[in-house]
Image 1: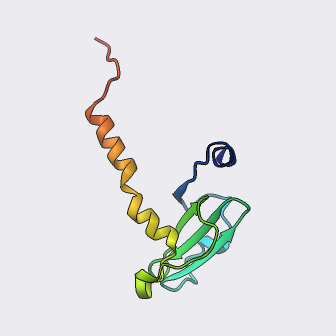
Image 2: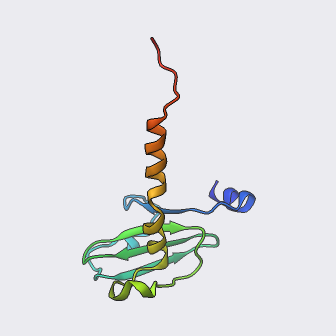
Amino acid sequence: MTLSLLKDHKLTLLETLRKNKMEIPPELVNRRARNAFTSIFGFQKTRILVSYGPKKNRCLLLTSTMHHDNKIDATTGKEMKPEMITLYNATKGGVDLIDQMCATYDAARTRR
């Protein structure tokens, strides 16, 4: 489905992933041997997966169909965040805003 959205409609995605998915390689989820501010990238034809360690023994997983390289954002300084993470942090409020607006103007029918 993701491939058809990208190919047919030119829609991209940038999302976080939970660590308990069995499709994710264990090397990306292993938190024991991770130092702070490290990134591990995984590439496929149309998408990229990054595992970023914001703290020691922690990891954050993101996947994207709009990024195709392992660029690190220079403005993050010693944290060395990938560009995927800085873009996600800058744009993540959209879904929350839409949910809030939909709750305010609910047009669902109610039973009496």
